[in-house]
Length: 91
Image (cartoon, rainbow, N blue to C red; front, side):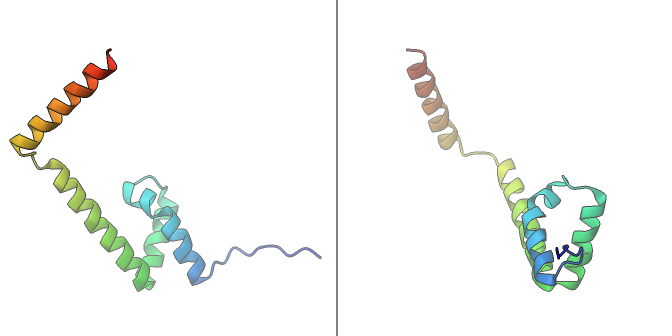
């Protein structure tokens, strides 16, 4: 007799699924039904809610850091290195 898988997922299984989909969730790449399921789960699972919150904060920090201007000396070194690399390629 074959056993069929049930659709009900254990709490640990839900956590595993959330972790697998977390990046896509934070990037807005998942459909509304999956996003709703993740939100429902995170309302009852403090571990996953903390993970989502921490990752959202990390993404925000990275985005803000990416907008900060580079110091002139760093910019000059980067440009010089790019010119060096480009001149090496053209030989």
